[in-house]
Length: 159
Image 1 (spheres, rainbow, N blue to C red):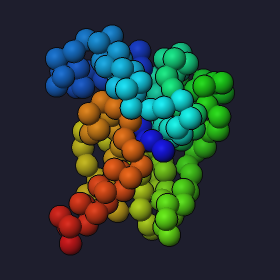
Image 2 (tube, rainbow, N blue to C red):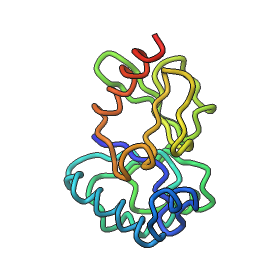
Image 3 (cartoon, helix red, strand yellow):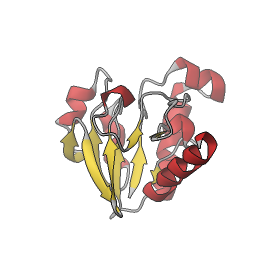
Image 4 (tube, helix red, strand yellow):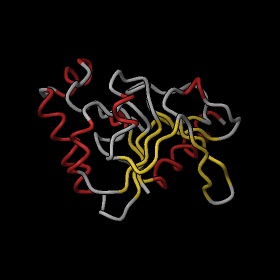
């Protein structure tokens, strides 16, 4: 299982391009190439919002589920055939814990672990939150197990 957020295909944020030194087209291709290298056709990918141009998803492997973001194209993404399911937020059972999947951290309703996007390169101040934006994940999806390790690191740093 994989997680990704803030791909912004077709409309890359200027800060991301400035930091990377890439053009928007080059960044779109980098994210897509990284996705193709990591994700297998039968894998599940949770996209935690701000997809951008959903046409990019058609050529990317994996069964895709959407947790909608605040991107202006998100209504189009929600009805896209690229996603097998679409949610505003979702609770995912991981081992013996519930993990909430949201786009915007402040919209989390649980008091437990939260995986999110929206902050791009910034981190949430609370250790129970971990951002899976491509800006923090080498411009690629991240395995659920790796995202969960971020909680452990956050707890050690703040504990």
